[in-house]
Length: 273
Image 1 (spheres, rainbow, N blue to C red):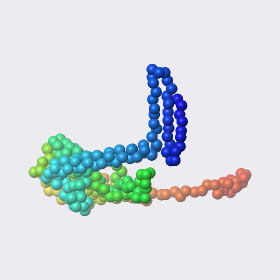
Image 2: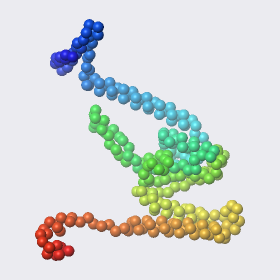
Image 3: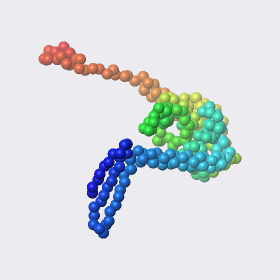
Image 4: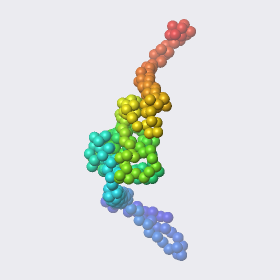
């Protein structure tokens, strides 16, 4: 192969001639400038983004059309608990890639819990001063999102919905079958959040409970009393664990070099000791 390069002004032209037999003939290959390839790639990327945005909008509207009284019940509880508007919560839910978990929660014999985290997450934002490098700033921003609870770090507020039966959740039974609760673990202090939730919400609610189902004696029943004692003891253990962690001894880092750099003989070691 013989290649010749000619520079005319700012344009680089490449001519390639493939030498071969008369049977194979010849071929001419033109190499495009790198700038043309980048421009084409940018156009394709822009078109892809537009297509993805269009698809996301269609998906959101399809989900919005499926919202009924069951979803409204969840949305109203979340809005009250997180101090958000119902419209904000609705937009968040229909935009979430885990939206299907809500449907699985409503289904017969479905998920027993549905979790939402409301906390700071890093959001990528395009740097206004950037050009072709596409550099981004990752800034913390408060966000409500659906979670399984096992993949994201928990550093804010958790809102949860629980169900104890296997019945399908309907518009008419959602308020009886689905239970809502929250606990605050701001700055990742999970022990303190759980301790507060149990001691200030769950235990008072249990001790004021009058209907214990098949247990007719209620709070006078020995098993009920033993259960409440166990919960109280567990909260006490949480409190002790939290205090032990908060009051733990922090050993100061010491620069050992200043003590050993001048040691020359055994007597120096004895003095240092």
